[in-house]
Image (cartoon, rainbow, N blue to C red; front, side):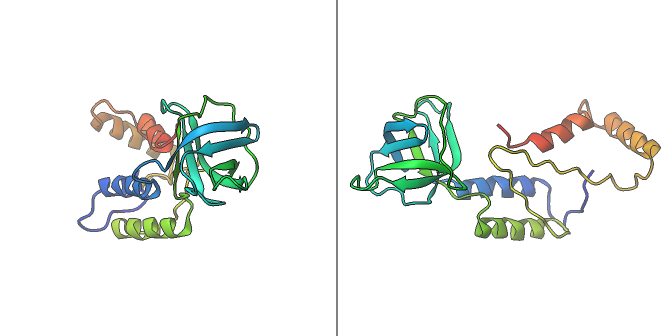
Length: 193
């Protein structure tokens, strides 16, 4: 199934390690502030316990206290004057107000994160991936509410339906109980909620 070959001495696992490394680079080592109050859920407005922890347009993620809810890939919107930057609206990446309908955010946490579509991050990940595979890399980042699906190129040597059926048959005979379509679906869904 691979569309390209790995460079000499490289392993496929390095691609996965690079992607996980990108996530680690985008996330902060710990939360930045605790949500002390929610002023409104529509539009979402919160107060945090750390003065000046955030600036207008910082990309942030909010998580509930029990870690089972919240929102990612949002930004700090207008900051209420006179609150030392502690109270602000939460907006989407286009600057549009958010109507939050999830679990209570009180005592949850807010963290600064790097947008995965950040040009510098994407450039760095592309450079690393191009050192692993013998091809040009086109990096596409999933949006938080979209699934990016890439229809893979046909396996090498497959030019007819009969070729594809032979390829799949050979795969299943040698796959020790794994199924090609399940492996392909896992590859597409990896990273999805």
